[in-house]
Length: 391
Image (cartoon, rainbow, N blue to C red; front, side, top):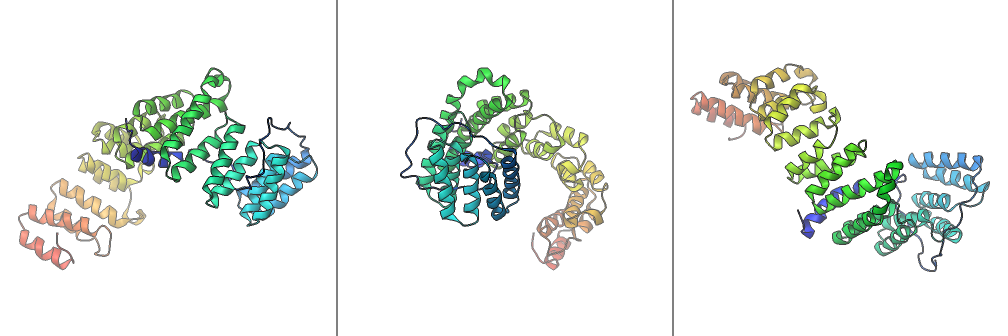
């Protein structure tokens, strides 16, 4: 288990992107002079007219049309009692248009209605975060968390903020508290897919942050057993584990996902990195080329597991004219020919790669090896010099 702060910081940084929100803004509000209330205000009536305008506003905000969204949110507020959630969304749209004063007024209005509104405090935290005001964002997210202790948005936002600000241990503590608070909900999770998804997400993110392989694998297994949870979260973690060299852990995590062509390229990377030749060969044989990255990627994989004849077969599935990177295709073909002992063909193929290509150095290496294997070292030196480089 990885326990150092440096490792936790690395791991948490990649994983806490799981806090994706319905709105992209990250807001702020004058936190002073807003006394906490003992209880939230009752829910207010929303007319069909207001709801229709609210939906329009959300669609406009999602498209980045924030000025139009502001007007739509205001229309939603005209025919019904003011609603803290709508005011929070209005504040985010106003802030996106650059109207900081209007955003602050909208947030203050929301807190006058309900000083414990999770939505308003979340909006305040996002605005402060986006403006680089760490202390304001921290306080707002903490108040949002206190207002709705079983909701996941505030803890994830707070943990992300702390990690980005150089406090990985505090970020992990936030996730641990959230998981502990929600432990009692586990007995009703089977009756609420939303509750269970939050619990699984918290476990997975916490295990990811701590580098706890056993817990991570167990969390991933539960994702699978409960209908997959959020597979994209699992994919993100697997990619980061591969990138940081934690190959076995990445493979365990991928094994928790149901077989899918969507994950084929990721699985292939893992099997190749782990030298799992049998697993890689099975995947290559049972998956169309495109999900694996195309015929050239398949050829390169076959070369990596020592099957150059299969590599050539893969390259023949697509003409050079169809290949977006023909020089890469040429290098793969030359490498396969070299591995098969067809030295003259390998040399001639490698010599076709242009000096300006990013694959030129690899082609020269193949050319040199082919000529030297053919007992022509002098020719090798002459050609590589003429082609603009030395091996």
